[in-house]
Image (cartoon, rainbow, N blue to C red; front, side, top):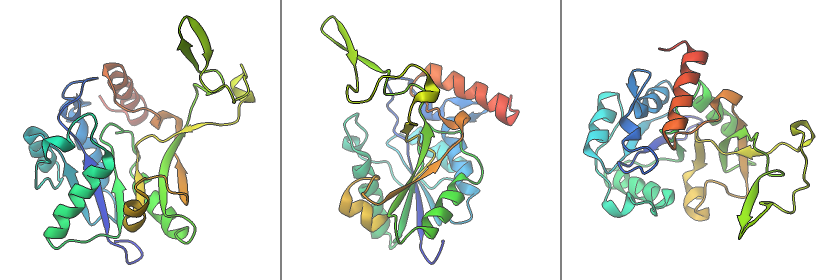
Length: 237
């Protein structure tokens, strides 16, 4: 709880993954990938519940063994490639409501972003508390180095700008900074989330993460990079 608000952490972790099959339980520096997110959540001073939403019994069992709460397996229609994160959130909230549990704020933690620092979650919560009259949500952002001004797309046999309205620059230092919402945390007032149906409402604030944290596990190359970063930054083996 923080500022009188009950806080739910939700970790979505489906079993199917085309980019890297079984990634959520794949061993990363000696622990299943999902364990890194659960253990960082458990370091928070403010989270009242850490719920793992999964469709996979093996993920659920591993989550429980690392201190996560995995009381159900989500239905198949919420574990497809086309299922929305909001639908997963609503399903979890409805389950908890039937159990007599209500929360004010939601912290969504993606297990594919394991490079959280111990205090990131609490720093974001404290920032949202301080700005809650202005912000309804806060997201973690990392600076993008593949800048939109130089990103391309292919149309037939031609290379064209992906963002034609962005002035073309070749030196990174000449670019206005651009940011990507890496999944360290998305935090929202639940009433706002359900009303606006997005983690990016009009009144959305930000929390800047460090350069080394700007990676997410989509495939084996990402996984290998993150493992190397953990060894370099955190001294792990």
